[in-house]
Amino acid sequence: MALATFAAGCGGGSSSSGAPTTVPTGIFFGTGLFTGTQTINGYTSPFRTSPYVLGFVTSAGSYMLLSYSMGSPNTILAIDSGAGGVTSGSFDSSTNLHSYMYPSIPIYQPQGGLLSATFVLNSDLSGRSINGSIDYAGTQGAVLSFPLGYVGGDVVPATLAAVAGTFTGTFYSNQNTSGYGTLPPLTSTFTVSATGALAGTVACPSSAISPPPGPQTPCTVSGTLTPRTDLNAYDVSFSFANGSATSFISGFTGKTATGLAYYDATSHSLMFGGIAPDTTAFSFSN
Image (cartoon, rainbow, N blue to C red; front, side, top):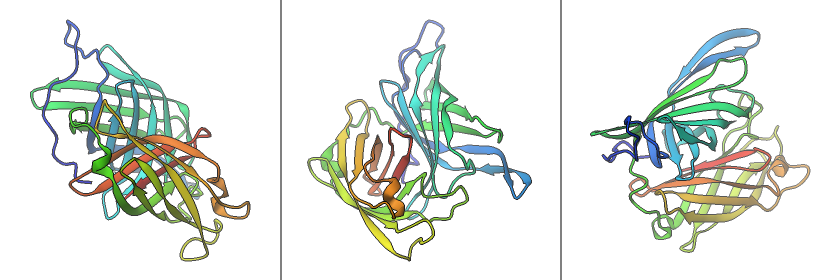
């Protein structure tokens, strides 16, 4: 995703002490640092990775961070999501949910919603940024740090005319992996209409032991993209219409996920993440 150029601007409102008092609404991008330990076959070793991070923060305080590796298509590694508020110049959340995707950056088990995420909004002449970190629960001591620059997402309005088109890429879920990456990402093609209808299919393996190019079960996906008015992003909602009790995709069937989407007109890249009520996570990138 071509997000290397950040728009300059000033921060939100501030108190007499100079600390920001408003939610840091916008689209943010940068390189994160993910550290911790992992235990494989009884041997514990440290890990250190540097994913790209695309961040959304809405005016209501809900947020989503997509950690990914850049490529063709981009590979989404994890989703962090939740809701927060501003206190003493920090944007804090105690409801962060970490959803590991395939291939996972090494948190092999889902981390619940009682995590702590701290975001700090800085305002200076070079533009806005969020310098934050998430300390994850569990025994791995995992931490994601993310100094993110402001992309200008609350200035340019999102439109359906901009995003209408066909996108072929990879579709991810935290059900795609046993924790050690036994299944590859699933291929998918989606069409977004001029009215915001999202339609397409995901090519799913018949079972967890028959990954592509083995037997495939096409799964029909339908939903909507709705432009937001507070930032250059879209609310996304999508549902899975079919599958069977004997197919791997039965874990998707009947679920509806909601989240946020971003479209980069320069690279014709669409990236979104969505969470179902049972915390099953899904994402797409091309």
